[in-house]
Image 1: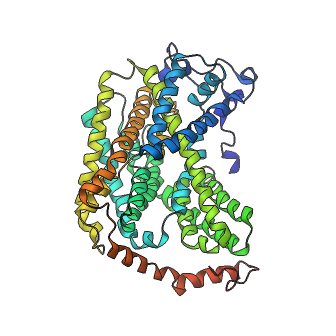
Image 2: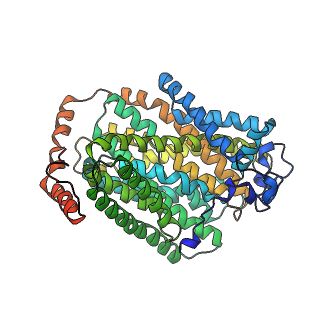
Image 3: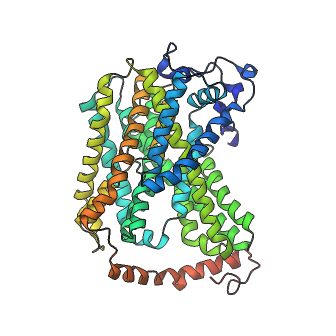
Length: 511
């Protein structure tokens, strides 16, 4: 089965840049320099060093942008997309020697699953691993409802809007469902950062983060099932349902397996920084790759499950001196992935707009960007407020003000971009579909980051939620008492004995 895994990301190595790549939108006469692939095959392409220029340039850009975004309170990822777009304009209009070669390689990566395999694994695992496990469990019913029931409704309502209102050419039911799945993955990173900064209720913050974590999994599962159906050309409802069940349930089983192995391993070692950190990295990447390719399951679901398991039980097994650095390392890996993805998205959007202008993209396709932005925000508000009685069950702190914040926090981010970039490189789909998916998705991500992300603090102030409630904080502090309940503690002690830990669980691992 491992032989089926695409071990070599072809687009990174010049020797693979052969005739299976084509100009963006099939426009060989495009005036965009990076819109056409390099004119070489195999050894003619020379060294792979040009491929390394762009990612390190993106990280260098991030080093300068990050402190500036903090100082001026502008969403970091939004600034990256703007600079990526500027880089795209330069790449399309100016010959820049080695940098142009690098941009061409990255604009025509093949297979397009490279971004999916390399960048999605750390982003999903980091979110799951740093989740507040206790509050996540208390809000699990509401999070699952938002991440599955609401996502299903949104996927189909987006598809209906595309097919019967937008009515772009060459779109089928399954390609519209693929698009709906992509746009259902939320990434409220700038919203949750603002909530934490202002000291807003931890329950509200965990509800938003937890929904984002699980709906990434559900949205990607729908995306994969519908993309397979779109590529096949015709699929029955039964075959799609079977795919969905295989991807989701198989991903859960794979995540539990990797999570249990990691817990046993962490219970058996103590004060081994390199080993403990490396174990989480192996679980994140090997678990994702094993589930996604050889097993044909959902790598995203696998990482969500294994990450949450390590958050709930694994952090207590990690040596005290390793816990803090481990969290920082995963925040760094997530930052690296986000930085490259958002700069690349800005670059590729400009390349697509430049290369596809006139055919297949028309002027009204750019107007549809605003239409989609308004529709998606309205749709989320309607679905969240219709779900208000369900989300409020057992949560007296949740009112209409909190519902407004949850509705407004439906930003799109890295997951949507990665899926859009994969669709953009899928040659089996019509170029008219691929170009619109990339341009619309990236533009919607940018708009939600600029508009929703930068104005969330104003909304919180207007709703009066930007002042921490001291009573709620005391109550919330008290809720952590069950977190050291003997039942989960006994599970950890059993693991240390069962897995053969040499350290005494009562002395060395007392926290």
